[in-house]
Length: 403
Image 1 (spheres, rainbow, N blue to C red):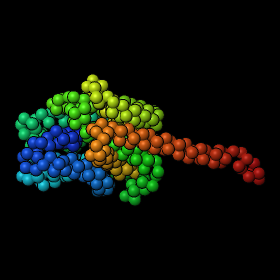
Image 2 (image 1 turned 45 degrees about the horizontal axis):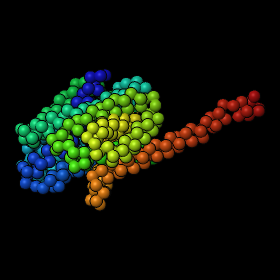
Image 3 (image 1 turned 180 degrees about the vertical axis):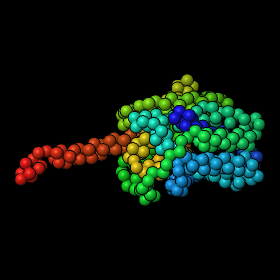
Image 4 (image 1 turned 90 degrees about the vertical axis):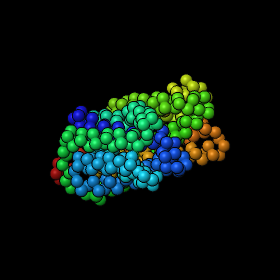
């Protein structure tokens, strides 16, 4: 079982690296293709939208094959996309390669979450999901800085060739180490879509959009914030992002540890703390040490929400969780795109580079409100069902003639 989770984590590491490394290589890519930096930025937004659209699309296609085989297909698609990017003769082909790779992202994490949860006992499901997501968080600590360094010294194409090689390793790992799980009998595509009629599934996805969107509202503009406000040099931003990544690793592991036993309390604590820390970042961003510490906390509290939210979707969509799980991964990227856009609006309005932190705090607070609403609705549903069950078991419910 641990080796199977390692194979999933390797795939997640490669996907996480290719998603974020482009941010550090935009100047090199723009110069090579002779396009502007904003135009090169389509490589980031195009990937995000590919994840949002690809998550349900690839999951629907995956209902026709076993989950292991679909994971292998997705890793193959990931490899192809990165090879296309690495060999692109013009910018349009590079963008197409990014979109191809992004189509594997949401479905891999969505299906991988289901596979990881099925590999362990029910009380260890969140921990198994967190183990797979460790690959994504470690990518921000190791893969992205290393990929950026290699791209800046040996050329950005080398970075994408190496990411493609990671995809090959992930593919071989899934093929060799992940056990074959038979397709769930009786589950059809309509059952997968039926999960979206469950209000708890929709609330969990909304929490995903708002909660992690709060993180990206701040992190998207971390470079101008740290250089213009905190006073760091541009070369220090890479190591500040490593600190953020370390916070993500810690938050992910703690989220997986406690989500199996205290899922909703964990969401209350992490979302409350994330709201406070993002609000304080408007102040701590003016001090180098305080800003660095705050970055670690944002990464920690932000990613502590990931395992519990993914597990909550799986729990609420039990019986047909694959599509819902994948769409929830798309929700992360939707939140990233929306929050980055709103953050850009407040900066353009002249409110300063710290203004997106307030946007993030409001988004995280909104996710906390939804968590309270979700828990309240769940308690009311349980309360209404208990009297009915008790009535059916009481002696008085049995007709007198049968006593």
